[in-house]
Length: 477
Picture 1 (cartoon, rainbow, N blue to C red):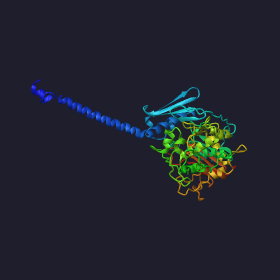
Picture 2 (cartoon, one colour):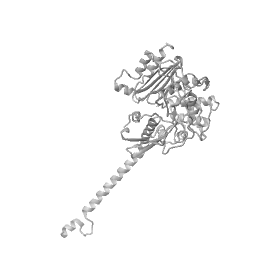
Picture 3 (cartoon, helix red, strand yellow):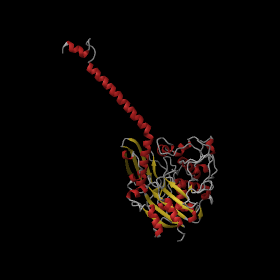
Picture 4 (tube, rainbow, N blue to C red):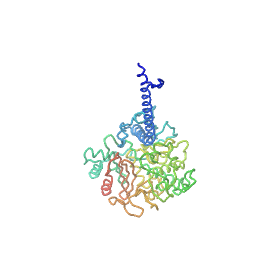
């Protein structure tokens, strides 16, 4: 190499590093800096979106666990709602010993992993590790007459009405969107109509979602009948030393507690955090502040129902040795709901807002129990006026965001006496759950109609038409 060429490469004093090497280091540093920024952005983006991702994986893990181990089905993917996250979920299930099970879900096996653990009688729990929940009371079917009732021979008009509720007049795509999986009809306490979609039958438990809230209010009624609870009770949580101490049992049932809430299933909202990020759902809700003075504003809140569930658990007793068992002793065993499972959270509190599974006939028994105003097999299990009070809407002075919501049930008459849906009898009330779950009760027609399905995109479940038609059929006709 000549001196001139060397000076061009190493500089005039022959001590500087090669210019090509210096340029390369600069490029590498720039690339490293850019990569670091990208990584920071990715990590930051992941941690920002992580609550929403955990909602998706928690939902998928719980769903897979329950569908396989509670219902005995092998197609949990058919119960996942339309969501852009679904194609990226890796979800697996695994049997654990002779009676346990586990499901796990993550984003491509790498991110936001969640697990759900199965316990016989209690269903599935989203948690990092499998919990122990003590006693699980056996529930025989003998007290429920509908468990062993033969399938009915349906009248032509009943069969035709049910066929429409299943979408027999629609094309395949329309029937899939409608998503009806089960219809059960009781008239005068007798099973008069029943039909199931392919893959389902009278023994297949189905998730009621927020119909569970109506069941929670029935359990509160059981304690009221036993003298362990009053709707006017206050001071419900030991940590409430401010205005929350004035919240009553009735306000929890009617969702007028005033506790700050957002039922939107979205990033960082209370409902998604409660269901998929909190081990103790009631503790999380109990720590939220007031947004309204108790009793003045009605706002739909799954959190309020889980607080009610905590009150029921504590008043019933055995919260230490059998924290998740009270639905079975208070309601399932007395009614003979042998298929019913109400899944708890990680600390053993049943998720009374959302997670009860039961066969359609057991759901129908819940409706019939309500229709009979708490009377079952000759025994009065609820206060005589419990159903009248909990299906009557009370006006909130600051307003309401859920017209017709009473106390765990939705009524067809507003607080001012006006009818909400004139096509239905005025005394109609219902339990209502996500994705199209319904128990409709019409006392004047001695009618109970159960509709279960998977209908996230259905604009009309055809339930009201079904109830209208069935209610118009003369009793005994």
